[in-house]
Figure 1 (spheres, rainbow, N blue to C red):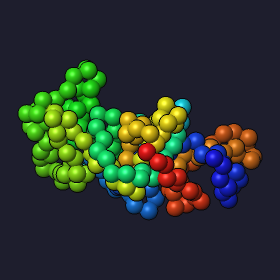
Figure 2 (cartoon, rainbow, N blue to C red):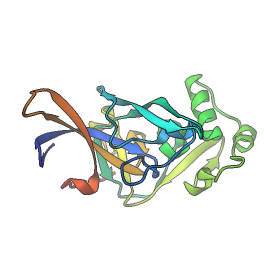
Figure 3 (cartoon, rainbow, N blue to C red):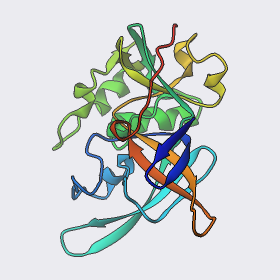
Figure 4 (cartoon, one colour):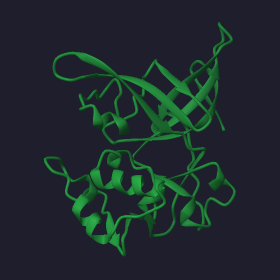
Length: 214
């Protein structure tokens, strides 16, 4: 996909998903260190773009001084509007708002070890003490030892490269559910001839998100 901007033609490299409290020039938040994991700095000048992920070094303030934190974000090659109502296993999803949630981390830790949480463990990890319960905000459902997140008709979902082959045929192709979408664009600097990258919100570009049939 190619888009036109004030400084020339750009190629869309992919899409990243950020927490709703995205860091940008107009809405700078002061998160704690763990919360940085799900945030994308839209105007970050210190980042590396690879084939399927983006690495940013973000400045944050701990109340006394400014520190730096390296953060990795997945890059997805495709997004589309889902046209059904379903529930997707949380094991396969990257949800920026939940990556520091105890239950989310426990589920993905078990997945890496090819095991799963028991029903008792799922409920033990569920409370998020002294924090707003984002688990409840996302409507997570626990059923038969598994945690599921609802995907509703009209939600925008992300796909991995493998999911592009048949992106609308199975729920397993869904890798993330949109919170705050940023478009990763690549362009050639007219003066230096070097390749540069920039992040844009969907409202800043002329885009058409397809509606795929399941």
